[in-house]
Structures are given as C-alpha cells and as structure tokens.
Length: 217
Image (cartoon, rainbow, N blue to C red; front, side, top):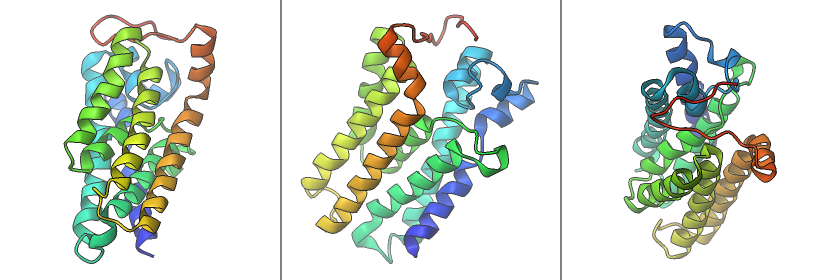
C-alpha cells in the first residue's frame, strides 16, 4: 500500500503545471502556441530564456519535493526500500506532469521532472552524470530531444550499475522492481519523444538555442 501512497503523492505534485501557470501570467496559453507542449523547451522557444529557466526550475522542484517528502514520510519505517519508494514518487510525478487529469491528460514530457528526481536521490554522482549526458549532445547538436533521451538512457544505466554495486542498500528483489520502474519511465520518455525521434532520423528536428531567438512553429 505504501507504494500507492508514494505514487499518489507524486501525481498530486506532478499536476502542478509550471508552464501553463507561468505562461498564463504572461498572457499566453502555452498549449496553443509553438509545439503545444506544456514544458520547458516550448516555453523557451515562445517566451525566451528567463521563462524557460523558470519553468525548468518549477518542474524540477515539484518532483524534488515529492521525492524528498516520500523519503521523510517513509524513510524511517521502510529504510530498506527508501530508494524504491522515491522512484514510485517520481513515477507518479512524471505521470501527473505528462497526463494531468484537470488538463484532459495533456501535459509535458517529464524530462525536467526527471531531473528533479535525479537531484532528489541526494547522491552527487547522479546529477553530475545527468548534466553531462544532457549537455554534451545538446551543445554539439542543439537538439533538446537528443539531450533528453541521452539523459534518460544514462539514468537507467546508472541506476542498474549502482544498484548492482550495492550502493542503494536494497535487496535484489527490490532492486529488480526499481529497475523495472526505471525502464518503464525511460520507455515512456522515448514514447513521448516519438515524433522528435522520427524528425531526428529524417534530419529535420528543430534546433533550440538558449540565448538566441528560436523559431516558433
């Protein structure tokens, strides 16, 4: 039952749509401009770097808070599976962000939420690897989608490697459960980026620049 609680806690936090709320304050419905995606990249393209970073921070923060809250609430009662419960909270938050019930299940793609979850691990190597996995391909190509997919692939691989090294201090059955959820989240990220992947393969994916004017669809 504790897993369900963690999912629900995450989902509630995930439904806080930073891009929608922030852009409405600026007189823009982000779902009706650009790509229509309620996330960091579309906000950056439409309203610029300041707005993009604000949305990025807000979406990271909501997942970080959800994951941290779960650790505080259940860490003492379930010390042998706290990392597993954190990934349940992250999964709930990403689902709430991607498929918010009050927005007819039309949200973002969950990458910023995942970045918040990675920080919520409170292990310094995870954010470091995540930043490198995203920034290196992004700085070379300026494709946010490619950087996002590399971030997720690196995250999944790192979870498995560190799990098998015994760093999380969990039993093998709990580790396998954690790997399954991490794989499911990775698969969801790739599914959410399916149109981007198709454009990448065809060579017509849109480039994104942080401090330069971006084209808006």
